[in-house]
Length: 240
Ligand code: IPE
Ligand code: IPE
Ligand code: MG
Image (cartoon, rainbow, N blue to C red; front, side):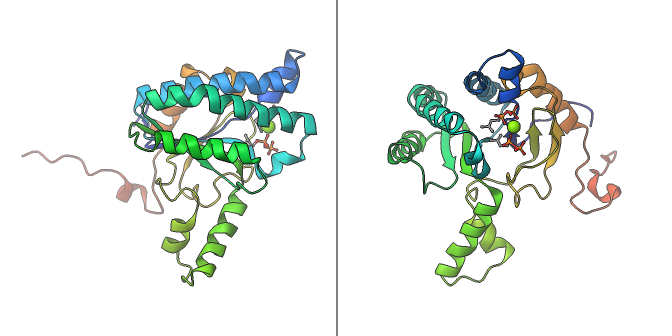
């Protein structure tokens, strides 16, 4: 296959906001603001392309270690996004989920998450998972603890069912912008067979062209899931 392919589930590590700002002699927060614009664009482009699930990494468990000013700026920006973006997403048919550890987040923010989820729960066009205060290790531990508490034996199925992305299938494609090639504690369990595309583009510059370039690369991959290439390829159509 050498054409762009549309992943059922696209996951993105939106990285490079800080460098985008620094290169312009702007405060890092200006990069995060521009990153929010890029996310809005990306949601629109994903809807147009028929992507069913979009999962974005917005704030990691480790991002608390950043300077206090940047962390509080990011929290403020999330508040603005909740107020300004959710009504439009609701109109566009997007079902929103906030994924991550809610303990330690301000009460008003958690209420904002709950309201946004409630307001968009009936939407069916696309699922948008915003991973905030999320870490793959946190997710596996909270899933294991939930199984223990309810006396359920851990199996691949029960553990997967207790993870915070149990409402969607595993990602088909992961895009990481910003030039680094690492997972940074994103979806550790769910990336088992995900194709990965690393883009040099800094997240605030990520546009439809950059998205289509990644989808083109995805279309060229052969997903084998442990099988041989011969097994993985579709059998040629037989003449009648
Ligand atoms: C990603 O951009 C956004 C968050 C982690 C919140 P960065 O802020 O990590 O940008 P760089 O990697 O420093 O350029
Ligand atoms: C990953 O980016 C987290 C988000 C994009 C929210 P980081 O910038 O935090 O990752 P590292 O520290 O470079 O690995
Ligand atoms: Mg970064």
